[in-house]
Length: 213
Length: 364
Image (cartoon, rainbow over all chains, first blue to last red; front, side, top):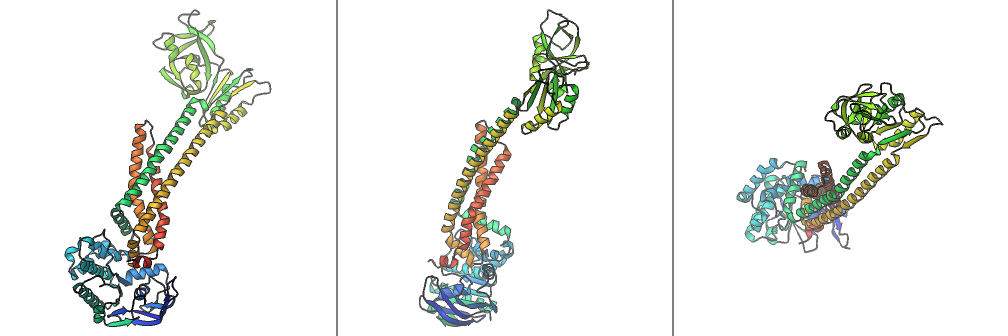
C-alpha cells in the first residue's frame, strides 16, 4: 500500500459543507486511478490533501503506510520533494526558464545537485520526444509539449506517487492520449501510484480504477 | 536545497525579474549615494574640524610661574615628560636679549630662551646640529632677519657677560612655535624656568593630564601660577565631534530607514506578482526556508549591484566636489546598504513563505 486515506473529511475554512464524509480509500501501486465527480465534490481538494498541501479536518493520509497528513510543514515539503510528483492542469512551467531547467526544478528542492540530474532530465525528455526542445522556453513549445515537460518534471525524483489535476483539460485528444498513456506506463514501469482528478470520460476510460466522489 | 543551488536559483530569478531587480538596485544605489554624499561629508568635516582643533593647540598646556618660585625646573620637566599621555614637555626661561656677537651691542636684538627638554620633539633642525651646553640655535626666521646665510658665529647678551656659539638653525612647531621669533640656548647649568609648555597626546586625555602635571609641580601656597589649560577647548572639540557624529548617525538611519521601507515595498510587490510561481515551487517541494532565501537572495544580489554602483558614483561625486571620502567608509556604507536591503526583504519573504499555495494554485 503506497497511498491511502482513512476516515477522511475536509471542511474549507469559510464553507459550512463537509467534503468526503469519512472517506476510506486505498490507491493501488502500479495503477492509474481516476478521481471524478461533479464540480465542487472535492476532486482537486482530495489531490491537494494527498499531496500534503492541505490538512484534512479529520482522518489521515497514509503514505507508504505512515500517517503523514499532520506532519510538520518541513516534513511535508520534504515528502513532496522526494516522494510525490505533481502535474497541473496547465503545466505551470516557469516562462523565464528553459524546458530542461523546469524538469530539473523539483530535484533541486530534493537537495540534489543540478549537474547530477541533468542527464536523467535529458533522458526523460528524450523518452517523451522532447530532446530537441530542452533549451527552449515554455513560450516556444506547444501546450501538449508543455504538458509532457510537466510529466518529466513530475518524474525527475522518481516519486512513488504522481498526482495530476486535470492534466488533459487543455489538450486535444491526441495530446491527451499521449499524456494518459505515459502516466499509465509510468505507473506500471515505476510501480508508482498515479491519481488523476478528472471529469474527462476519455481519461476515465483509460484508468485502471475510477473513484466517484 | 543546496546553498549553491539556492544562489543559482536566486540569480536566475533576479535575471528573470529584471524590472524589480533594477528597481531594487536603484533604491540601494540611491541609499548608498545619499549616505556617502551626506553622511560621508559630515564625517569628513568632523575629521577635518577635529584635525584643525588638534593643530590649533587643543593639546597644549602652558603653566607660567609668575612669582618665580622655581617649581618649573629640570627635575619636574623630567617627571612630566614621563607621563604616558605627554608628547613633550619643555621649560622656557624668561626671554632675554642677545645680539650677533660679531656686530656687538649695536646689533639687532634677538629674543632668546633657555630651554630645558628634548628640543627635537617640538622643533625641526633645519641646519647644523643640536646645541651642547652653552651653545645656541637660531630660528630659520631669525637667521633670515639677521641676513645670515648659515648659522655660524655667536650670540652675546646685550651686557656682554655671556656668549653662545651658534651651531644650527631650527623651525619650532606646535606649542613652541613662539620660539620662531628668536633663538634658544642650552644653558650650561639649567636653572628654574618661567614657563612650562606641555604637549598632550590626545585631546581626550587633556583634563587628566592637566591634573597630573599640576600634582607634579605641587605649587606651594606662595606660588602664583597662570595655567592656560586646553581643557575647555578639548571639551568643545569632543562635543563638536560627538554632535557631528550624532547628526551623521541620525541622517544615516533616516536614509537607511527610507531605503529599507522602499525595498520592502518593492519586494512585497514582487512577491504578489510572483505568487503563482512561488505556489508552484511550494507544491513541487520547496520548503518555507527555501522560499525565504530565494526571495531575500534575489534582493541581496540586486542590492550588491546597486551598492557597487551607488558607492562608486558617490565616491566620484565627492572627489569631484573636492571632498575626499575614505574608501573604507564607502565599503562600509555599501555593506550596510546590502544588509539593510536584505533585512528589509525578510518580512515580505516570510509573507511569501506563508502564502497558501493551494489558494494560489487554484486561481485559473
